[in-house]
Image (cartoon, rainbow, N blue to C red; front, side, top):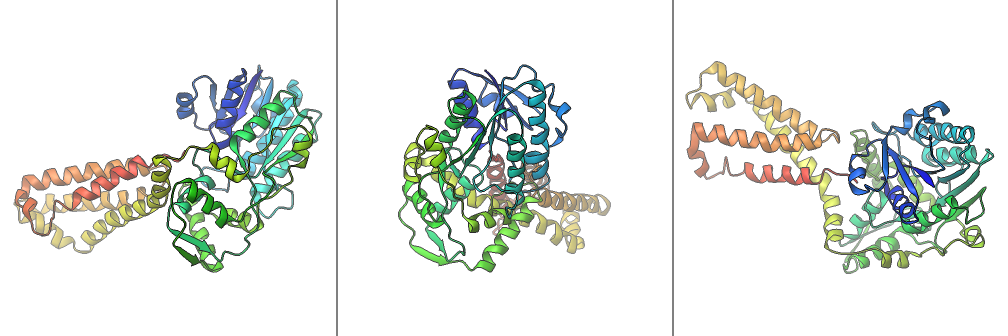
Amino acid sequence: MRILVLGGYGLIGTAVVSRCLAAGHAVTGLGRDVSAARLRQPDADWIARDIATLTEPSDWTATLQGIDAVVNCSGALQDGPRDDVRAVQATAMRALFACCRLMGIRRVVQISAVGASLDAPTEFMRSKAEADAAVAALDLDWVILRPGLVLSPLSYGATGLIRALASIPVAFVGMRGHRPIQTVHVDDVAEAAVLGLEGRIAPRASYDLVEAHGHVLPDIVAGFRAWLGRPPAVLALPVPTWLLRIGFRIGDLVGRLGWRTPIRTMALRQIEAGIGGDPTDWERAGGAPLSSLSESLRRMPSGVQERWFGRLWLLKPAILAMLSLFWGLSGLIALAHLDAAMAAMTAHGITPGPARAMVLAGIAIDLVLGLAILVRRTMPLAALGMVAMTGIYLFLGSALAAGLWLDPLGAYLKTLPGAMLALVAYALADER
């Protein structure tokens, strides 16, 4: 079959594309930015479209030409500058499913989420449920798959957060609502999608894809800690609910800067509610056995790259905050002591007019870089800009006052670690 996979480069979508290709199907992946996906999975065709803009059945007609089946792996955790949850998960899906009916594409697999319902406490779950209801109302051979917490060799979203928590020697306890969370391996979800596409499980049915028994979040983190080869946590740190909520509110603010952090209030509400379902219908349908948490961890590689990632995941926001603070304060301090900054230049033979212009330009650049490093879209360029400006500063400084290389306070030398930290930030720019 020619299969269209929406969100084909995401956590679940990547596995679905790979599994469909392995089964001998032709695959077309669709998403907003497919440049990296074309390189990673060249055996698939790729279409760059913003799903949130495809809100009418006619918007899908050209994309669905020649397609035999559709898998929807797209989704968004929470609204943000780059994401509109309702548009992606509900409005666009209603249009897609209606177009499938009009074009005679009968096989549709909808990747939903366990616990999705129209009265769920989060927009993520409500919009998923709306899409589920929309496809279920049509005379198609649809299958709705509702995975629990998806574990994957790839690190993104919640899987990245759990790796990070497992990488520090502290166990966070005392969080309210330690309700069970049931997991599933991403390859189990991909296999279920292929079974649905090929008609090897009963259509027009919904299936919860979860392990038999759930775990509280601290136990999941402990399992990942052992998987990483780290000893048990040496310190149990109680986290009051009010502090937890403040942290997740900060995550909401960070999301407004374009970062897709899983530390958001929607995720907190989901953790408090638990993630659980019933795999009985899947087992009765003859689906492949679903891996437990321990089995899923055994199926995933664990090496130095996972240990590095876990620690760097937590260090990344600290690195960006430190760079922003360093460059922002540099600009503000120079602005507050403009005369002194100018005097440092006129003392080396630069006339007051050019000295003032150079100082003001430097202040403006410092402030712009300090702010730009915090915004997802501009962060990579800002990091490179910091390296470039450090080089320019050292070049001009060496021409005017080469002796400062030997300054006891390290006037020049101290800029080099900052430039290296900016390079580290640039290396950590990718989110998936």
